[in-house]
Image (cartoon, rainbow over all chains, first blue to last red; front, side):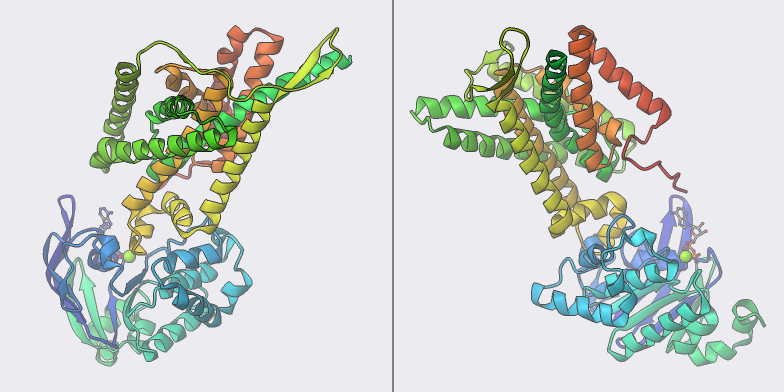
Length: 233
Length: 308
Ligand SMILES: Nc1ncnc2c1ncn2[C@@H]1O[C@H](COP(=O)(O)OP(=O)(O)O)[C@@H](O)[C@H]1O
Ligand SMILES: [Mg+2]
């Protein structure tokens, strides 16, 4: 469904990604793990066209999207829950969701809103509250809900568990698994390697902008290098 | 005693009248700043063009023998809003979009260039002298004792308030209820994220210029009819005042622009009345300096959080 071939990305003169090749198939959960600063967010955002890949090809549903503008890419069934959530803090919960559903046909829109509120009853309670005044966990739910408003076929999540209480993290991973069961393809970036590998079908390990390992989630969980570097031995 | 009170009320009414038009212009500055972090120095010229178009439409309709006041007023309003909106759209395309992502200074120079260009374009096509327009709407109410001080409230003043209020209410509905209006707010909070939701931020920016320009044209019509005179240079000082109002209220904040405009109008009227009209600009700009010194984010703005 999504395929990267020899993708490199630069920030000015600094090269952040080196010849990345990676694939996500329909219906999978694929996770990308790596230390802070390894290039995980850069990789996810490069697929979205922001920053743009300096070389290589990115194919999504058979089309090369590596030269397309970000907004156009994001209208083809992709949705992203970016690092730091990036909710619109000055807008209400309902307004944030409506931005996620900007291009959703109006007869679908109401149903989607209800589905999101069903998934996150907390958001329904805070419908008219300014998003910036909510807790971190609620904001993360909002960021996921906003992404779901567009009926994505494929969902990108960048460290959705960062800074959240264990019980909330548990909830979020449950929802990710549930979305996959409903047919959404998932590309999950995590530092929380343990939990990410548990639910992932396959995983990639990134170090200093290079993919150094790839295998099934189960195999990576018991891989010695991965255990030492990311799972605390 | 009553006399003094009436005198004060009179100044308040005058101040609110001018202030509400400042507020209309200030919204354009504040919306554009909120979304691209740049002062659109050609915005005052849009206001001036709004007045010219109003005068041309009124003169044209009179020539054709149309004199129904509501019809003339509505036609002038719609045409000047439409013309100003197309100018706003064109300015963004020509002067700002090509420079997006470059240093701020370039866009600033381009903005000033655009302002000079528009001023001279109007000067060449319409002449540089004052053009006067006979009052369309005359009469009003008076209060008080004719032998001492009589306060007056003209119909035109009331029309200015009503039109301003309706326009502001429409704008508020637009930015809180419609999806494109909400997108304007979303863009001003996180333009990149708006793109990541599939919304073309360039279109939202263009829309912001168009809306701001249309509001400036409303002010152009109202003040044009109020003063009954226009020349190619009125945009400069009105723009400066409205910019002051926007900063006073907190640049980027729409309620701030509304409040800043009213406050500035009232301050000017009071200064003219109790000191001297020659000091009104001095006091207005001193107010700006004071706000910048002690509350640089303005009355309703939020302190800038340093982004790292
Ligand atoms: N906007 C940017 N400008 C310059 N360098 C950046 C930028 N964003 C990230 N980098 C650099 O690119 C590298 C990868 O960063 P990032 O993708 O954020 O890593 P991760 O998400 O794995 O923590 C780091 O060295 C980081 O300093
Ligand atoms: Mg990251």
